Structures are given as structure tokens and as C-alpha cells.
Image (cartoon, rainbow, N blue to C red; front, side, top):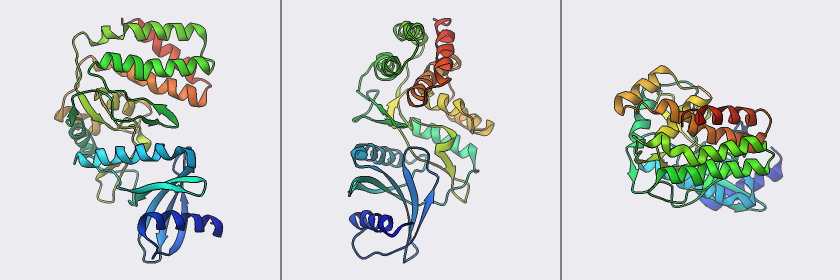
Length: 294
């Protein structure tokens, strides 16, 4: 790590921890494609996890910190403690508790604790603030009507971005038809507004050395718990024990088998908007499948 970079990191940590600290080493880590991430070890052997991005993205880190606080306050799944965020120089940063994470652990406990997270409910769907899903903005305007929330804040929002990003007109028109018709998937199902992780794919779940689960990088809001379960299935990484433990704690409705495609369409459209390529074709296939259900 160049001394200029180390000096900047030291300034960031001093902003949160005070002036009487010294850095022993900075180790870059693989933290996804959005932020620069590193583990910082101080002279007293204490460790911290640091996320850095351009200064204009401070609110992204502020929202992430709020999401982590919400998950931690639920006393369900463990999440790293946010220690502070700010801007130093031209860069925004988020300082987090360091946790020694590993890939494998107790998936049964993870499933049961996810159900416990979802048992924390609110009067309205949405959240008190917008945040991000990956690198994309995510609106969370609060409403009592879940179908309206999904139509406007999720499916409709991504469809309009996709149209601007070159989504084929026929696929866009089918998406609008689906948006108007999704109420048919909720005639016998009225979800409560559960506290959600919001971005629950396998890369955002890890384990402590004792096997207990840890989640991070959330896109928190209140909504249908099925959305978290659906995304957990989208890219894999969650085993049979995870789903068995979740269902033992709070069984899923039979209509989930269809609605999970609707919920994952949001993420596939988001991937199209971020990365393009074959995600557009996948989104169109999912849309056609759902239109056949309604």
C-alpha cells in the first residue's frame, strides 16, 4: 500500500477513532465490484474493515450503516457493527467492525435466524429512506399496499431504467402488462411488512469460526419475506438445511413457487441495467412465464 493511500486511510480512521492510533498494515480484500475494501490492522493489533468509494456516494454508505443497525437491532442474524462513515479528501468511506469470516458454517441456524429477522414487522412496506441494490438506486417509498409498492418501487422502476438502457420494446411492453397484472398473484396472499435483508445472495452470507452466520451488504426495507427467500435461490449457495430450518420456523405459502419468479425478475432487470448482455433475454423469459400465470 502506497504511503499516500495509507495516510488517507489513517485520516479516515482518526476521524472515527481519535488521533492516538497508528496503522501497522493495510491488506486489500476482495469486496465485490462496487467498493475498494481493506482490512486495517493497527499497532495495538486491533482490526477494522474499511469500504471506500468516491465522495459523492456518501449516502450509499449512510444507508448501508442504517441497514446494518436495523438488522443488529433485531437480535436475529448477526451483522457487522458500523463504526462510522464520512468523507476524507475526495473519497467516502464506511468503517466496520472486523469479523473473521469463513465460507462454511451452520446453515440450519442461518435459516432459523432469517425467519426471526422476518418476524420483525412494520405497519407499512418500504423504509424511511432510499438505499441501493448493488450499485443501483433503490426507492423505498412507504405504503400499506404491497402490490402497489412492487409495481412502482421495484418492477416499474427497473423497467423504466431498462427501457433507457436498450431493453427491447416488445420485452418492455410485456413488462408493463405484467406490472399492471401482478395483483392476480396476490388474491389469496397478503404479506406482512417484514424486515428484509434485501440483497440476500450467497455472497452476502458468511460464518464466524464457531459456525454462526453473519450477513452484510444489505439493501434493507420492510416487505414480503418471500423476496429474501427468492433471491437466496437465484444464484445458489444456500442448502437444504437452510430452507428446512426456515420453513420449520415459519412455513412459506404455496404461492411462493410462482411469486419467486416475480421477485427475482427485479434482480435480473437490475443486472441488465448494470451489466447488460444476456440478462435482458433472461428477464424477458421470466416475464413471459409470469404472464402465463395471470
